[in-house]
Structure formats: C-alpha cells, structure tokens
Length: 405
Ligand SMILES: *Cc1c(COP(=O)(O)O)cnc(C)c1O
Image (cartoon, rainbow, N blue to C red; front, top):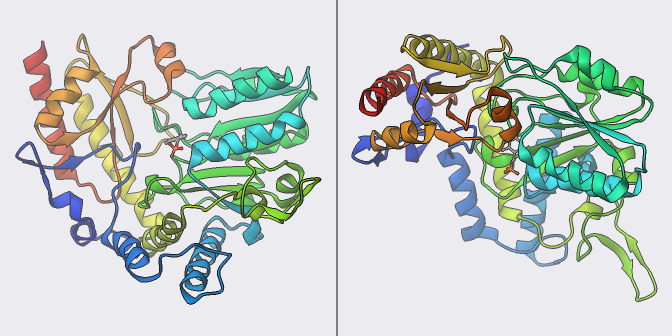
C-alpha cells in the first residue's frame, strides 16, 4: 500500500507554481486542501455543460443538474456509511452544520441542562454552544486537556450526568492534530442519553468515518479540507434527530405547502436545505470523495504518518524548537514554536521561501491559553506532500531562527 506521490502531484496544477520565486511548498492543508484536476474538471463541466437550478425544473438541464446533485448525495452517504441518503444534509460547511444543530436544540433544552464540549475545540465549535446556552439557560462544561494535548477522559466521566443533553467534540484537533477517542466519548454519552455531535472537519481528509459503526448522532464536515471546493459540506444526522429538530432557515425548497395561515415543511433532507444550494459545489464534493477513495484512505493514512514521523524527528533536532501536541494518536499536523521568536515572524520568512504554513491561534485560542503562548507555527501535511518538502521546511526554520535571534 504505497502511494505514487510523483504521479499524484501531477493531478494538482497548483503544486507546480512558484511563490516568491521558489517552488510552492504547501503545508497549510489543515486550513484548506488543494484541488485535483479531476475536481476542477467537474466544476468546469458543470458550468459549461448543465448549469441549472435543481429540483424545480422539467427541462433537461435542470434534470441533469438534479440527478448529479442527488448522485453526489448518494456518494457521500456511501462514503460515511449513513443508513439513509436523507440523513445527509448539504450545508455550506462545518460551521453551518454546527449552527444548524445548535439552533435546532434551542427548543429542546431548558435551564439546568448541560452541554459538554472539549478544551480542544475550534472556535466554530465553542461559540454556537455559548449562544445556545444564552438562549436556553443551559450550562457549558469543558473536558480539560493535558500537556500532550489529549482530553482527560477521567474528567469527562465526572462531568457526565443525567443533566447532560449534548456532547460536542472534534474528531481530530485542527490546532494540534490529536485524534480524540470519540468511540469512548459516544458510548459514555449515550449511557446518560445525551446526543453527540462530532466535528469531523479535520478528520475527513485522513480517515473514512463510519457513522453507523460509531453510532454517532450528528457528524459534520467541509468539502474544502478533503480536496473539494469551498462553501459546501455536510451534516449527517440520525433520522430520528433530524425529524425532531425544527428547520434552521425558511425559504424555497424546504416547504411542502405554504399559505399565509400555515406552512408545512418538506421531508428530509429538503427541510434543512432552504434556497438554492451550492449545486456545483455539492457535485464537486462527490468528485473529491471519488478521488480520495481511488487513492485509498489506508494508503493515505500510512503515508501521512510517515511524513509526520519524519517531520517530527527533523524539527525536534533544531535547538530551541518545541512541538505542541505530542499525543501518540495524532494526524499529520506539527504545531511548534522557536524559543523567544514570535510564530508570525517565522511564518513570514517561510513564505519568502515559498513555504505556506499557518501561524496564530488556529481558531483555538483556549488551547493557546492552556500552553500560555500567543500561537504556534503549524505545518500540516497531505498525501501529496513529500519528504523533500519537509527538508525545505526544516532548512527554512533554521534560516528563520538565524535571522531572528
Ligand atoms: C476547519 C475547521 C472547522 C471550520 O470549518 P469551515 O469549513 O470553516 O466551516 C471546524 N472545526 C475544525 C476542527 C476545523 O478544522
């Protein structure tokens, strides 16, 4: 199960461009992934061949677009192993999916109820719950983390009670790369009848989640982190939960019948898909899933693990470099700082060398507060990256250290 990375790289036109006169080294995959020609072609085909609004037209283009869009939903259903296709709701991305669920729970929670989130969350998985608590009088509890960047599961056990109604945890932390023990979290939460939403934005580029095996209640993801376009994602929800939640937005497509006296809502999934969706994006999301499955998630995971070990070893050999997030269970993310040097300055010098990394708090300020740092430099690897590129990063970091200290 080895990857032909040289061939894979040919699928990504952007990887052959230069930045500041240097070959691009793209290590910001945890923020967004690059797009293979197969997905770009799919987008071009849509706009040049059958661009039309879906579900409403009798004309040929509209039917073609509808068929492709619903085909994409089936691909996504198969990929996540959802029991039913209408359990897959198209969204504009992870953030939208989380807000949809948080909003829906407004009518299901009351004062005294508790929501548990983790200390490793992305802001998009903290703020909607704080807003939900303000609306309902429920309280937010936080599973703490340890120095390795892992959740302290014994503390989770103590937080769980009959008052716990919802648990929200990311599958993989975008800031540190930690893979959270979501199987155990889901099982324990279900013992007190709490619903569980897993933020899979960071996991789906590396892992193929099986929502039925996980028995998870809600799972959200974004296409743009797994070789698809921006502005589209999915919410998976168990049918019984999606039927229970009220619609999020009113508009076209989500209704069964409208009079000024009363409106009845459409069946799933349309109840949650008001207005014209990102049709092209949904279809291209399907193409991205096809692309990644053709490469194979086992091969991707193995190769990325190799990159992670290689980068960790080479970076740790640099004096004064500290890595944050040292769990044994992590994906190909290396968050680090050079002693006495601001991460932003390191990122700026790396960019001059054509190396794209992220610097800052990575939308996870509570994690930075925990380590008492302003942020980190984050290099995140994908299956199209190489060890040579990691060598370039290591040289760049050494250069930055020399220039800045
Ligand atoms: C990227 C990311 C999000 C937000 O995804 P959007 O596509 O911006 O909505 C949420 N959670 C995690 C863990 C992420 O990595």
